[in-house]
Image (tube, rainbow, N blue to C red; front, side, top):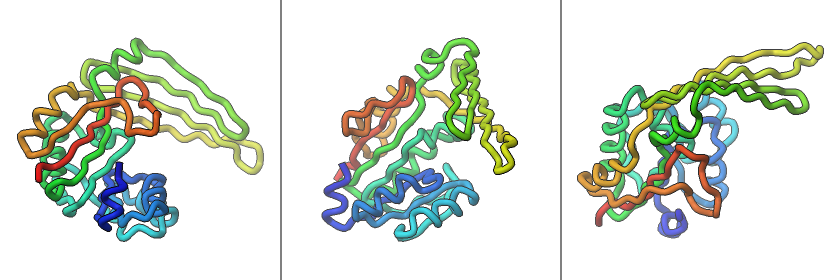
Length: 212
């Protein structure tokens, strides 16, 4: 998907780079990348992991300006961590405005079906060598809350516990296509970024191009 961007030495802007996993893949594939995240701690990790990025900077959506780009990418439904659907809409407008004409958008968003995919309050647990995780999901009509406890072995065989709480805003992704069209981006809604790998039920991909 990003091949034409690389061929013309275009600039890829990544939103919500986290620890830099995708950033490093993009750099290794020969792309010029500006990686961004709202978390200074995550940016520190990304700077150590994706050392070949053109720039790694703090950017907080929906208000911080997005650099002009030939492609804007975001995996892990980053926009769904914004506080409400209005903030998501404002971020989409900012993304559309930052895309150069004819250029590519590829992001993930959580759909309302995320709540249908995990009804009730199930508790899941996974155990492996040196770590364990318990996860509890609390779906509601427009929010998906995941509470996780992660246990890792210390050197003295004791365990360390870290707790995480993830809150995702759920939207009707069917409305994103006409909304983006109003801002010059022709998009499709799907379940995969390509390569034959589909997302779990709930998150959807938004892939589009800015009008020339």
